Length: 224
Image (tube, rainbow, N blue to C red; front, side, top):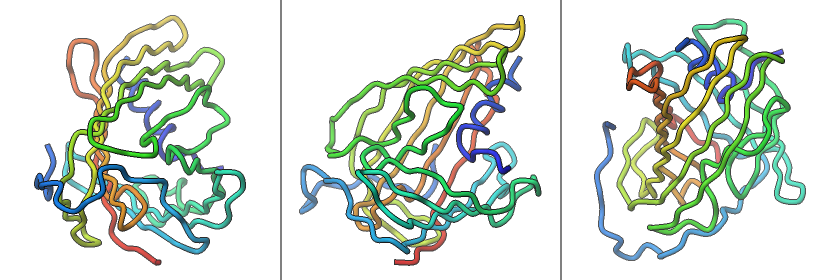
């Protein structure tokens, strides 16, 4: 079975630990002060590439196809088209929360909340979750998110007006008899025109500030 794209990599990044291009600030102009929950249509598809910011190389390309909606939850076919880990290539059905754009995971307690609609500049929220891949292996995360400003973002799929959402938080990790902690930062650029995040960045560090993982996802194609 294919590993979860986000949480599997997050746990691996943290447990292995025993500045963005194409973005310009913009004035609010005629953009609405609050961005409402997007209306998504079955069959819409977004394709992304993932870049390892350590090496500046693409490590994975994946698509998300929205299939059906039930009570604020979407079934999404997630297809990993190419990866440096060939075992990850393939398609799995995933559940997507329309209000937070977070994905469900049976190994997750709590909820990861990249967004929280409606969105407006200045909005803040805090969330916590726990990821437990084995009985003796666990990561606990608490993050605070804030919508900071509108920006113009250029990615391979085009140029979009997007809300910048910045996350900052801490994690504690346990693996057998080892314990350590560190920090996580994430940034999302949500474009109302697309109804999805068009770019995101992730970074985690140890308690001493050593960076273990940093990567960027960018939208490369849209099927409306």
